[in-house]
Image (cartoon, rainbow, N blue to C red; front, top):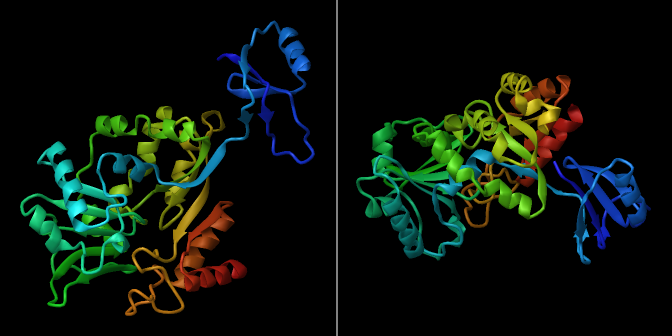
Length: 361
């Protein structure tokens, strides 16, 4: 790899009283020298190195940013789906889905992502009926921005065998119309019911979709990511996301960032298996050191555990997706094994409950 000498700009070290270095030399992708410009040139000359001279022309160099919470698989998945970001009404959503459907093979599901129900005007909603009107004979799944809610149409539900008799898993919620029929809306752990049947994209298509995504992060200064990786059916992706760690391993050469893997699971089996892989190798700029637990939901789906009812959905104040004894058991196991304990807790009551468990730990 080339050696570069950067100068004539602001070099920010983030070290207290660290002064203002005149130059920075990198060798093999690592910082090799930091100090006065002339001293940097002498350092290179003493090693018979002819560095590439980079005149910053007043620009700044600073440590890379860390995205501490990134879901690699959904990020790639979103790139293959209809983008409903900032869609303001059902007409806009319909237009985007219909355009996307023209590009998708009829053997595949039509998937929309980044949907936010709170952006819809009063009187409009997105449920099974609205999707059926657009696509009566093709399976459709809409993924909420927060990842904790999906909406499916009748074609999809009938195709995967989900009906009125389907039981919601503990920590999940299946929504119904007033007449008792399925609305097509699934929250929290119930999200996994339709997702478990989603056709898996080919590796080639996933690699193609990932091209440029992580380079885009690098261009915006993100050099390290905290990657959320499911190891079993625990998590917003349900059973369909079990392969998340395997996908990231397969795509590692396309990800320029350092990776700090945060493993989601019911037990430590997944994280213990992952520390034996290249996702826990210093030479691969990757380490697996944290275990994540989902304790409640999100504001967008009105499932974050609150101490008072929601103003826009007074019939609920959200809920804990796991009992406190189960949360503590997982926390304790991870802590004793030497892993960092990470908890998804969003609502004020959910946070208070988890703080109390940390104090107990």
